[in-house]
Image (cartoon, helix red, strand yellow):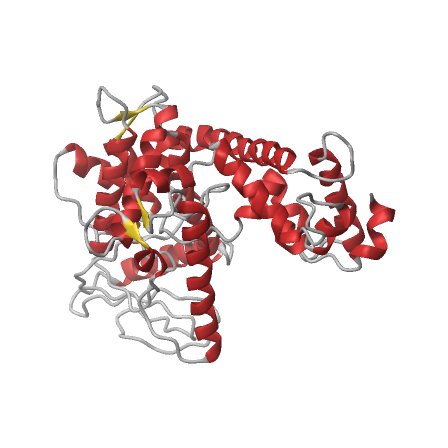
Length: 422
């Protein structure tokens, strides 16, 4: 019988109970508990036993299979020799696998897990899922899906030219300055790009969790895929769910499952059937695509930040620091910036009626990426950041000088190069 690689599962066919003193490279392999014969795995010079003897040291760089059988059985010598040879075949096959086999599998698992889990960060949305400010928001709504085009390693001259190309696209009336209305339309266009990217990715992710291709995914189907991405055996999980058995998962994973289940129910449009279509699955992963799921996301954020239980947010609640203490001035500066940024956002943009309280409706309007009124306010704020001559427009020299705000990269020599690039 040909065996492709050495695994513990292959050993019962030898009719020999085994144990291992060295962990397998893949922790998912189950290790037998009871033994009467002894198999020794070591990367050190290993023992190759003589028939009928216990162990004797021989110098070898390979992993040797050492079997001890009862000395009282005089007929076992030939069997031991057979075990040596068979074990060597197993182990040579195992050692021939690539050295990065485990890391490759780990990376693949991480990719699969990320594909089916709702992301913590949503492009073009002002708050993260945990209620933190989206630090990349301005770049996301100015660059759209071209976010990677302005990394620090880019050639500065090429980046300046690229930025001026964007400027000319935003400047619809070609008067060499950008108005708030022009910036508003550009923000809406770039936000739509992020939406289209999410729809495209969702189609792939939905296919990964819809194995039978019937266009619907049940909660149980999703749960199997999720737990498999966390390292559980997919078949065992599926069988346990089918037989209504209790799943053996750790407390943290169980908590994540409960949160995901609540989100799943919210994404399931009436009449509820616990089956998500491709569009509903998009809302599950990206709540910004659905008014109902956006409301759910807002409720989750308010629940996490609301300290007095009135289901709305005061300024002290919104700017309260995360749990922990600072130990140096740098940490204190970070805390101060956290408070100042959130205070400004609360007072100038979120609290629309300026009564010192943010309701769920106000927070929902603020977070809605397709809200045109918000896009106009955002456009005015972005222009004000760089509007040095106070004419309420953005000009080429200004956008180059404040390139870090718009692109995340600081492009030097803006004044000298502006006419060359524009």
